Image 1: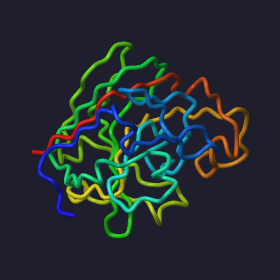
Image 2: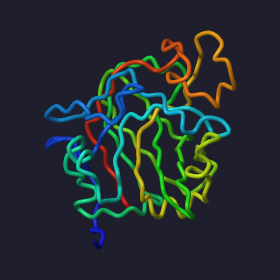
Image 3: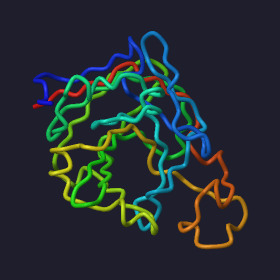
Image 4: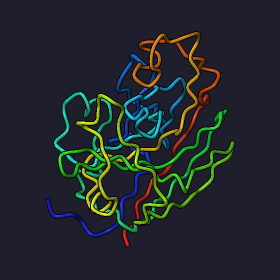
Length: 234
């Protein structure tokens, strides 16, 4: 499908619009709570260990949007009609501007909410997080703007843990930005993983909350409401 001219805007007034979340370590893909005008996510969130060292670290997946179809039936049931894909919006996000309208109640515990893009290139999925432009969450609605600059110094490539190096890896940022062909997300990163007791092995080769318990009090807690997400193309 030829991409439409024009910007992408999701107001969540007519469902989640293809957005989904991942809650709890063993609950997996989850539908976001959807009101008449926003989507909400509430802790506890899954500890995503796919990018543990030698990758860049652990994260929570808060809001996620697939950017390329076809989508499976379960995904469609969870996330509703993906308007980004169905309307044929461009996956070229180089120098695009992202605008979010957001609020919430949080104890971030040292983590930041950042935009993540994922693109498949040269046989690997490259996850790039825009760590130079964190998103703040206040009790009242705020509108914030991100510039998707092609400068790698503004981003962090998350890479993959020891047993995911065949799937996740570092690829140059520019071609990834020009074709974000996997998904984009709002994530909490990095997480402070504090084991309960001695895990009994290499911490980063094990998996938190699968191989050993963690102190949840060291992780982000709260609720976040996303009212609007826009992509303005250059």
